[in-house]
Image: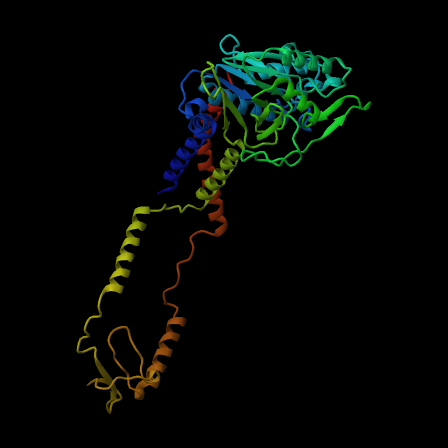
Length: 504
């Protein structure tokens, strides 16, 4: 394979890598490893399908210590938004959900953004998750990064609807509450409104199974096991209060008292939450029996969890089924691993082009030589030693005549020579030189060797036609030229795949 052929092969490898990393990974991974739970359990199709997403937390100036409107911040926002848009278009929507549910924290610095920045973030959110409510019902729950806690409620909830509401999907009723206010000042408006809503729900006749929706998870003890899907460390309870100590400024979980109040009042069969950015499956105790809670991980790859995910929920459309609510967790491609593979492939590409022989490498020729060597090795092991010729099984004695000429006289070999000092073996046969001539032969060999060393006409190693510096420069120039060719072919492919999902 010549360098030009190697360049063509690397172009193809890069094209296939980009095709998978920028498009197929989002389509194949989720569709191959995930599905609606009622399908996987071979149940009937009389279920309504709900896709559950949470914590996109669109990156803004409050997320990183980057100057507003800077190129670095714009790039981070672009690649973060692009990943979630691809995940939504290629991994979530192909499942054709009947309802889409967001569990909060759509923005990152919602309470601290200016009105203009808020509108820009809202426009980005609608671009990242393009769905028409006329085609698919969408329900939003406000999180602490959207409107803050009660004493930081700086945004009107009109964009997300009411903070406390209920809706029905099939035979399942979903109860959404303002988790940021449930532990607030009992005399405050937001906390009072939330508790009044919960009380009204508890007084109604429960005609359907209920699922509680809360952005902040319910209380769980420190170091509670979250199950096998948890990828990060367990987060323990942490509560930060306002300066007057009357309001909640931040909390990891709803307090134990409020959690018990919600479970006993609403009587859900399932609790769905977000906020934690990682998966956690726990079982709570209530006076009506155990209740399972699924904390869904973030859909973003830049929120501390390199394994983004979403959930598929099947809600039965008839009351005759024994399993009315089923869930399935789905993982998205690991974007960090994709970028690491890009970097590794780039290093391998440069090394291959830099170290590849100028004359190329013949893989078939080397393979043939390997086969021949293997055959010879096998033949040498399995073959029996051949009988020596008579002329080889003999001894030679050196004789000198009167004129000083040496003659070799062949004598029959009847006695084997066992002492190494008494013989010199050669490649073929068992020819033995008598010690009478040993000294002279050694001298002749020494003279011959010395003559070969100091003979100016002796054969020498061929000198290099080019210096190392020149060779290195040539290799660098060749590598740069080949990398330029690979980039010229694959950069347009990358840009096409990049903006294919970004442009409406």
